Image (tube, rainbow over all chains, first blue to last red; front, side):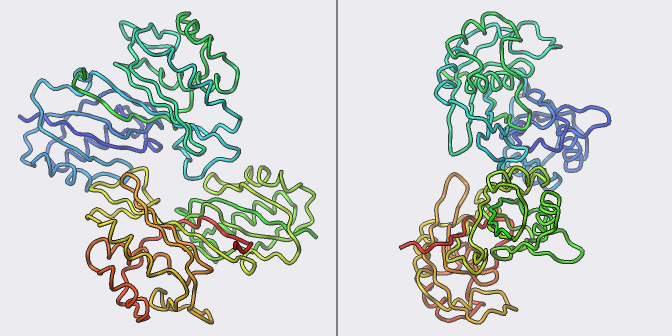
Length: 248
Length: 248
């Protein structure tokens, strides 16, 4: 029995997130059905984490067990011929049997897109948060370092989480602007439910002058969800990278 | 009676081009209906030119006559509230009565996008020509200058045109690559039917090694459609700019 690791890109607009659920179309379900067609048996695929309705992925990783004879390098082509145009597999490799797409992940990078201009860009529809009011990029950059390092991020998590600990480590948080598009890139060892979207919403509140960047360390330490910003819309969020080896 | 010039952006994926036709949804029709709702009378709008099914616009210009009291600077907001998300008006101004969106135009710029990599990018679906085979960018750049200046472009026009002359002047033709995306930018005093898409298809043939860049002046001079490349797909084409004043 082979263990195969696959990396896919998807436009989440038309899906109810990654994870299979009843009465709603999900990315996992579409991938399992496509794998069933090319391997002859429907595998259970294990993803690197959940993504919400409308959230996108530039590089989502999953694994599955299979007896298929298709060589790994040919698998993306075979799979893509059975996938809709909004899901594309671009890498596959055989991995040791102990590999686990979620448990073996040591680092994840997410990107959040904000279109900041007077009128929405039609080509960013469902791809970025359209925010028409002025944002002070320098203030957003000033607030970013407060998130770095290891903190209890309980104030940046949506209600209803079931994790054992709300402590996470953030390795990098960059805010850049290109044309009308503000791009926030965040790398951490893991993220709480809605954590990236709440950080994005908080940085937008900072840029809008509603939160003082100097108050950010105190807001994080307070663990008080009401002192952070709103949860930014799903359409601006992209899972950009999942790392499986510790970088030193 | 006012004469109003408007500039809109649209994602052409779901439209049968610009111009009103029976039994098919067009951008012009949607805009006229939206203007009817906000001005109280359906104006006849005059566009800067036709675009084909699936072709996009970053800055399409049209004009119309109206007695509306809405100030020009408020018109885009009023109009957008009656438009679907894939058409956005971002500029409007009062112009002299003799202004004509098509006849007054002195220069147009089109952009053509080619995604050149092994796997299609889901975020460029319907937005670029996916071309998975290797392309030699340097050869494409070498071929570009042959198009500059005034030529009879009859070999780069689709059959069935009705124009008086097939002579056009190209002011600039740039080919750049960013990541996987090759971007061709072309500026001219006007373009024949499908001309930009045939030039894009020809440059791709050059990049693929099927046409020698040194042969390009001769191919243009020949006026022979069969010596040029294929007509590149509509989805990669964007009307990027329409100029109404001669630049010196």
